[in-house]
Image (cartoon, rainbow, N blue to C red):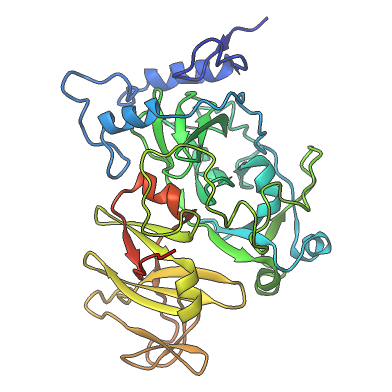
Length: 410
């Protein structure tokens, strides 16, 4: 019988469901690589040092790790998808409603993949490997194949906090896959990677405990949108995660309720997990887009942008704009400095149902592309934003700036 290893920070009883020995062998390779000493093995005086996670020192991460809520659920009790199948947009439409939430990822190679929320709510993690990795298994990495790590990605969704993140699936120098530890922190899922068996915050995409403590995963943007508009915009241009997952789940239903129907978990004020900090400036489950810029943290209220359709604001010294895409029911955030011309800052307005910049009256799409005027074919630089409920974002990022700021009154 194969030996087993444990998730860090748990007692033997808490590790009733343990992980196979294979990740530990990969970890030995990581530790043997020059310059890749585990973050947990700190030298004297380094406990308070900065990490790759903005706003967090090693000491702060230790406190977070100590605050992890042991739910009693075993690792992988919610199964991640590791061999996802994809279908065309037209085929996916046969079993999807127009008001369904979907998550869109534009990969660096130009590929677009769409992940329905009603599938992710049952799995929370999709470990995806783009074509071109020549069949490499990310759970059994081949050190002799440099560059293959760039093909592995994980798309993650935590229904309790409504947070969506995507990142390159790499723990140390090798690609990995991720799973659910079964535990929570600030109402947000705690993940583990299958190479180093470290614990990671889903919302932070950062390592809380284990050999990779203090490291952060390379994030990529995810767009939260509705299927009705997405299927029109991406017909023939994207792949959609298939319901043929190998698991028997009611993918047409959401066990937590509905984002479209009031009176469910997603819009009440009931919190099911303890928080390290509760910020009452906004309702706890209000949807926001979380920002990190220049050591500042911010939260853009999604419903305010939808109402106004355009929001010009400045975070620190960075001028930003949030644009609402009505067709897809999606909010995007861009840098208002024209790419290649940092001395030119644009201000956007809505005129006759079109986005214009005030300076030249050029016409822009919600995707940040100018289609008419002096800036035709120019593009705005997108800013990575994390969709989340306010309570979770604020618990991890205290004193976040709110845009626009509307004092919540009961």
